[in-house]
Image 1 (cartoon, rainbow, N blue to C red):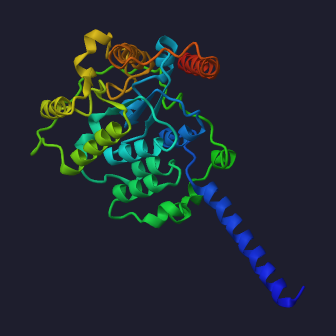
Image 2 (cartoon, rainbow, N blue to C red):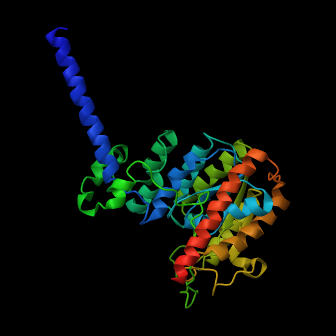
Image 3 (tube, rainbow, N blue to C red):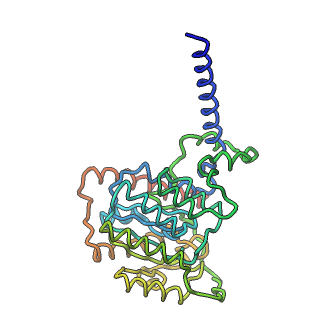
Length: 346
């Protein structure tokens, strides 16, 4: 072997060592979302799932904290998954739906409309909790470009080490323990909480200068609607029964009009408190911002009845393979419920 060939192999070997070292370093420094701010792990968990869902939810915390896919399966035989994330902006919901259609085509998509209030990019921290969990595709690239604030840089998403290189002082044992294998934190995208903090003294909404949703928000709602129509998917709009952030009557009118114009089913759970049996003294864990387990199960029961009556989704509990998968999921769901109640009792 000549000297020139040896030099080439030496260079290749050195470059490989540097690249592997940088990959390890990047994995170490990136947030793990395993103990703190677990919501950042939700988006990535979808990719490990069997892709045979009847219903896909998209949206912000008002979907992943307020609806329970375990109830939809247990009581209705509906196989569902929540592709939710913290402050998921409507363009992120659109690109997540686009991404989902690379893997499967659900019969129903449920979109929570709270994010219509945002017309521009908001905060990097929330962007990263949605975008970093997505697998690379054109949808992820487009979502990053639509979501970046003026201070953000696209290359920081391509090479997260550029963004997290200063996390050395924040590293803990979980950064090492979960470097390559992050524990599952959700139940088909649902984030469970069983604790209770009653809703008291909920603030009224402040007066806004303009109650109209922005052009960008409307554009992406139209894109979601069109994408569902193109793929023969039933789109359902929902407003979860969170008491805060405040949902204005003027916002409600705009969504009602849009649903009527586009022949969409719209369910505002704020108007169905009596029908669902919600009790905001027992069914919320943070004073009305989100529901706890008992509240989520109540409105999911109601939603299941609507899905059965309005969409004709089949009860799939007699499918042996899928039933076997859900048997394990329901066992994990009940164990998590018991664990949380035990921790509360301590």
